[in-house]
Image (cartoon, rainbow, N blue to C red; front, side, top):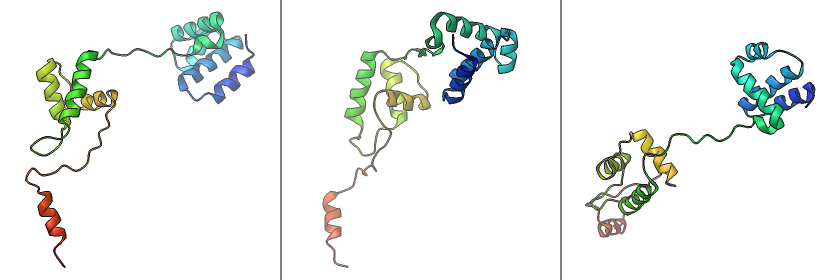
Length: 156
């Protein structure tokens, strides 16, 4: 068991707000306050305080550290993500000019994989796949490199 002063100092130094509140709960618990009163002080449920205290008593301070939550599973399988990556790389620059946009990717996913995404989540998916949404200026399909070079050589 740690002293109340140590727990209070630990709470003051902690950057993670969730862990900070857990340390404060333990500080009050070590002062002999009941769990219901601690929950009222901190604005949390008594169940949370009970869980934190029990975890602390069985695992010391390590028991208070949050485990990474898995979150919602991806809608696309790993194979589908790999196929999508290939599609994006091969079609980043369109043959008729312009660039691949999020709407194009959304439509492709809908048509090929029969999975619906919103445009906002397309950007999250791209980030997960290792892409950044930074593009250069696209070229007009009728743009001619030769005409541009000839224009640069015209005397002023």
